[in-house]
Length: 184
Picture 1 (cartoon, rainbow, N blue to C red):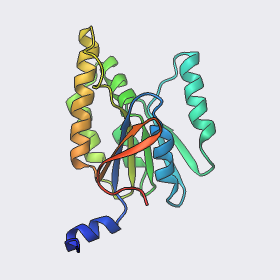
Picture 2: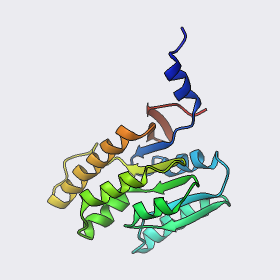
Picture 3: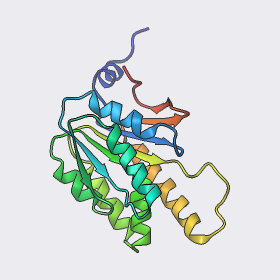
């Protein structure tokens, strides 16, 4: 059976916006890095983490050490939209949206304005891969801040998944394709 022309053309083009979701240590970052490095360098890695303790500094170092030459790292714990706009035509990996959301919430930022700025910045033409933790699969958090965070992350993921060309859910290092084309 022949697919309609619109399906054929969508299958042939690389996804412009990819959302990679999964739990902690599910392989999200490594998978996302692989998507970006299929394209010619230079690549932009927008890091949202803030390393306030030794454990987080070790995690950041592990990510940095794993990346091959050709990456330009931009630290943007809160100014994600500006970092995306500054990336120009380079392929971009944002790791991770849940840390960015945490930074905004703890900084009492306007989440609606920040999400609107992010939405505008994602109008860029180069490939963009967004990594985020799926936090809504567990038990209901026992405190108001954690529940607000879980709800805000869920809304953010829904909004991004709706506009993404591809959504991938990582489980135990394996990609499950939720929306859009599979890897080639």
